[in-house]
Amino acid sequence: MTPVDPDMLSAYFDGELPPAEAARVERLIADDPAWATALAELQSLDVALDAYECPAMPRELPSRIVAARRAERSVWVRVLRLAAPLAAAAVIVLAMTLAGPWRNSHTATPPLAMTEVDDLASSQLLFFSNMDSIQTLADNETLLDVDTLDALAKLEAPGSGR
Image (cartoon, rainbow, N blue to C red; front, side, top):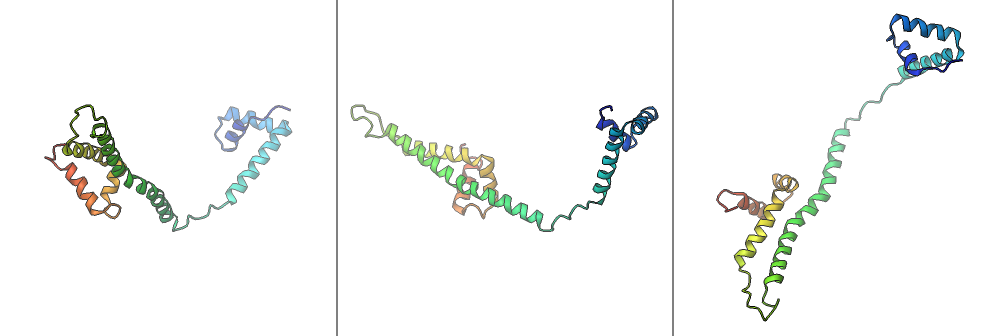
């Protein structure tokens, strides 16, 4: 008994071998019961696969996939909606903490001007508005309120100084 080469037997079964190799495999099938058994199994597998019918795709599958993707994104939409204002608030709190009059009463550090705080907050909002996910939100007015869209538009408008 010689070991059966499944690739060669499959190529023989599919008619892909050159004549000399096909004749060699035919001799092996005739002389070796292992090769004959392997060929019979391959033939029965082929019959079973021919009998199998793939079920049709349900018509509603594409809409279910789209709905699942939207639901998946909606969690991130809510998280990202909060990210920009929270980042701006964090910048303001940090700026006020570092430069506020309560920091050190012995130094004469002037308080941070409100325009500088606005600039810091605006740069944070601009950073988050340039993220792809925020841009996706801005493209769909149902996901962001009008005031936020107006603020983003002002930040991105030419001549806004940014």
